[in-house]
Image 1 (cartoon, one colour):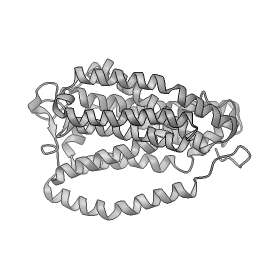
Image 2 (image 1 turned 30 degrees about the horizontal axis):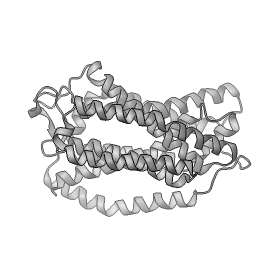
Image 3 (image 1 turned 90 degrees about the vertical axis):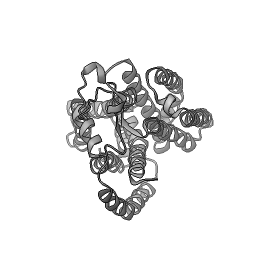
Image 4 (image 1 turned 135 degrees about the horizontal axis):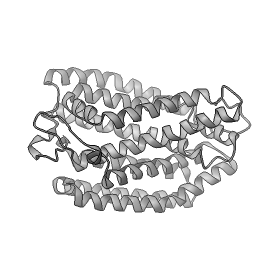
Length: 337
């Protein structure tokens, strides 16, 4: 494996980590609007991700930084072409972070309702926008010979990318509801578990629709047919197991299965793209690949040494933090948010 290919895999792993970890944060944030019946239950839900959400967002920053350092042409083309949706994404994440810190500072209903809406929108928009962006990468975008992406609104937002965005939102919601069932107790836990099980049917429908549209509107099955079919089969098994574990109230295993679904879905995007990183809808020859979009070999070598040195410490810290804050959140506790 060349260093170009290694860093493509590392970028994929970083995005998988982000969607797995931040995915349940998004799901919790969305569920505060319809799962929680009162302010106390909203505080319980928010406190269930309180020790984790900010560290989970770092995975997205690290993925973006890795793209910038390892694949500067990919970073430049994608971030300039998707400038508007990515700015909205960042503003939504900033607004949600501010809301987490500010909603509990004033004991006023209007104050809390305003920040609660910021939490909801800041949890809904990012997975939707990222789903739209990743779907666009699969479908192809107008990239010319100078590696410039000149996409109009309907190049970025169309039926295919909308279905992709909605699928990611629903997947994160189910993932978050299962995390709530792991971290809460009583009636709130039961409602989270029940709603997660109910949402499996629309999630299955969205997966099927997106897979069929991907087959007909992209070339990824033509390019990487067998690996994608294998991922789909494993994903189907994980989906069925998630439903079975939910029916048995094995929340931890069910959460692991939805996490597996997320990992397989993001892996499928990168497998379908490889060796490309962005597909040109103008001419296949203009597509960016891991070889034409990457930094020089010396830069990749230095980055690899630094990454392999620091990554174990980062992972150890995050695992430790989840171990420390593994207990369930109870309404009778002092709730910060």
